[in-house]
Image (cartoon, rainbow, N blue to C red; front, top):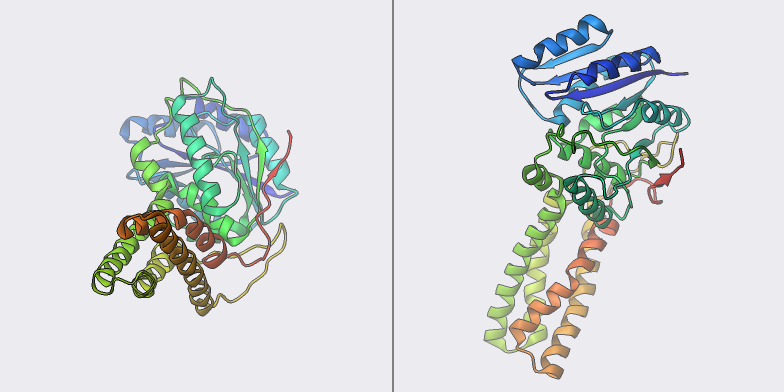
Length: 368
């Protein structure tokens, strides 16, 4: 059996964390706690942890965020020569000892995979948590094509071999955990889900999640896609309007506008929205494959999509204007909106898809 480490990022934790650490150590688990700049008033609690347990305590002088705290612990673990499993656990009491042990047992059977302990939201769950999970679940599925029930879970198990990948992923706060799922889904690293108990203490009062700021970070990619699409649309619409006012030709105006705007859109999406990360790609649990990504392929694929969208757009545009007598400028807006989601899905899953394997991620739900 591999050695097992429990990594706990802690920001202003409750006293109950001490007893949880002691229970973990009674099961021969090695515990690493990262004090994410909790402040002087919490130093006695962290000192008590060191005095009464064998915990390895990493102190961050300032609050840098959950992602930064996790990376600090992973950076330490990367220096160890031994082979081991890691499980990350939240410090606010949301994860039980039983579920922690269960996920570690499952991790023994699945190398090169990310295992998630997924909660089921019910009417008794805090409204903020229910809404947050519901929205992020839908956004994640739309963004990646991979259905995950609980994208916000902090109970995650993986092997030492995934540490370099995890350290390469951007994000220092709550968005980091979402970025991990996004990057692993792109890379084809299998994500396995296992149901766990849903625990919220005092209506989740121990959570330091900032609904506005952290939600903005989490939904960053889709917001970036919308913003770049809006910029490209404004450029396209401006060029179309100028050409149509001068020539009066719908097809010609649409063609000139699209040729110029598509290159701007390609550059923005490739380098700003769907930028490739340096992640080691895994095809299946226990397997590793590599393949050189060809930027020219992206460009050719994008041109193919642009040509297809242009033809559909032009046919719709001409049909709406000529058959329904709709204003040519208003018709342009309608056709662009109609094709927006289709364009996003194709670019995300077919063009700027940097998974090394040809298959999909395997998201498994296994009963406890």
